[in-house]
Amino acid sequence: MAQTRRESPLARLRYRVAAANLARHLPGEPCRVLDVAGGAGGDALPLAALGHEVTLVDPAGALLECARTHAEGLPGRVHVVQAHAEDVPHLFTAAAFDVVLCHGLLHHVDDRVALLRAVTAPLRPGGLLSVVGPNPAADPLVAAAGEGDLDRALALAGSGRVWVQEVRAALPACTADDVRADLTALGAEPIAHYGIRCVADLVAPPVDPDALEVLELALADRMPYPLLARFFHLLARRS
Image 1 (cartoon, rainbow, N blue to C red):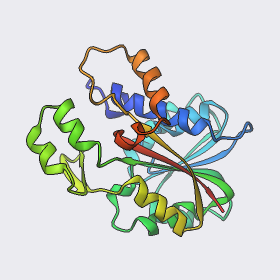
Image 2: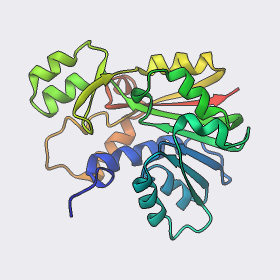
Image 3: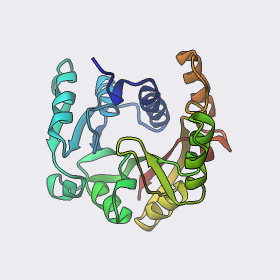
């Protein structure tokens, strides 16, 4: 059977580093977590396994069914809702969640502020917002050093766009600074900036995946590596 994107080594690494970053800011007790556009549950299901109650929202029924199947050993901890991110304010009450995940979504929308306002509508005051997005500064490096595609590296350099493999196209990018400003405008307080896959997309195989993960975790919060990582990871508190 072909390997799914969620099962690929780089995808697994993305989820594991994001989870480690997030764990630094979660309280000791179980939380109510909303994962917006969470697909098959790559971020949500490990949180449920730790004892958190997770609600997964995504418009793709097939992905939600996959998440539901993988959640069979976690009774009562995983809820799935087929809906778009923009529907979130109409689906849940205010302060319904302690944590909101918005991973891999902002570069697909035209109005980031409107989207962030929607997904944080049910986040309680003091709640934690986690945002992950592709970092446009990394794309020329990945294209050139990781894939040997110098033409695409040159086209992406300074273009304000990111290469999205799923659609095999360059989409308008947002930077960590852009999103930090958006969050501040919405009254949220940015508290941390991590990098995800700081070097993983640049190393040539074969490589020890465990050693690579140890290195990625060590670099995730050490500047300047987050500035060049494949993904930025911002954490913020709702005021």
